[in-house]
Image 1 (cartoon, rainbow, N blue to C red):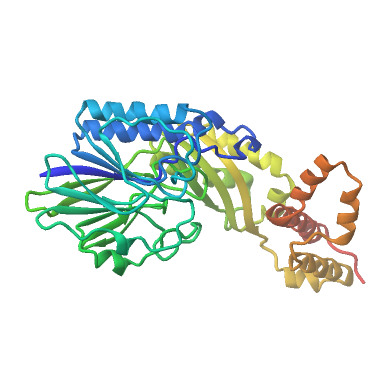
Image 2: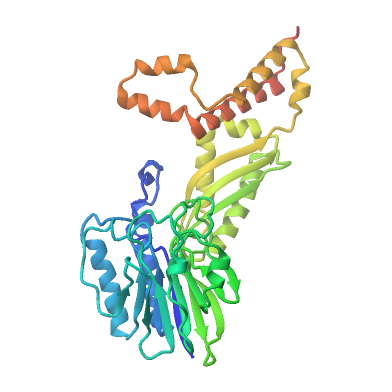
Length: 417
């Protein structure tokens, strides 16, 4: 019997661009999370006494700013070398041969596959052969699977591949291939990288993505880690367990305010949602995006004072007993009154409602008069204001304005025709 770990996409020292733009963001904690998650990977390998470790690409996020990134990796590999644990590694699109310009000599327990062609490497002392190929360049549009060697008879054959398969939302297409391509190769296990969401695609043979070790933003929610695989003496997979390694847990916490009439009730529901998320995160830092939804009498009040709402959310988060950072607060609530009936009340109200509807249906392009106003601003200020008036920011601003106006019309009455 032997055991190995399938890991992928550590993205060591990912810069996490734009994090400084978030008020109160624990930037250093999140920026250092990738290294800490990698340290957790090494600790797991040592504690479980695995026989070898696989890393399916994107060890690095790109070219090194200095040698500290490479030194961190070699230091961790030296810990595994001392325990007699070999490591098999391929480069992906982020750390392809053409991307990484700085080099350090790797400890001799680390075997990096060549980018020139797929090769087969035996695991010392075990009936295991690992087949793999690194990316030569960031762009690899061709299917690499046909070039992988045939399986070795009487051995447990593992394919190490960085691929988007046939495509995945949120990921660029690299080394595309089909599930049938992988199944047809005759290997016992395919250790895939590139897709950051953990997934088991097939069990005969085992094919799957380990996912990344650490979520890097709110689009990478939930547990992140690696797979611990046990193979019996008959060279059959006995168990394949997901092991979380992340130190910051990203979550979207949805708070349904349907029927809520008092602010206290809304905050109570928020507290319940955050407590569940904190419990799921364990002792990790919870980085949460809050989304308020549902038809509620609080709709207008929530949009009218978003700064106060965020402060109230932070106050609730402080009472959760574990560290919580609120990444953003999004409002998707709706009013409890009937907008169509409101529009029929009088002519002025009808005009206002129709104007708001037209603004909602408008394009993302800025109106000509707004563009003209921006031209007179200094360039640095112009870019900042334009960003606030474009795309998602503009839609959020319009939603706030719409909610405030409709709330005023519904509660204060209109001007009869």
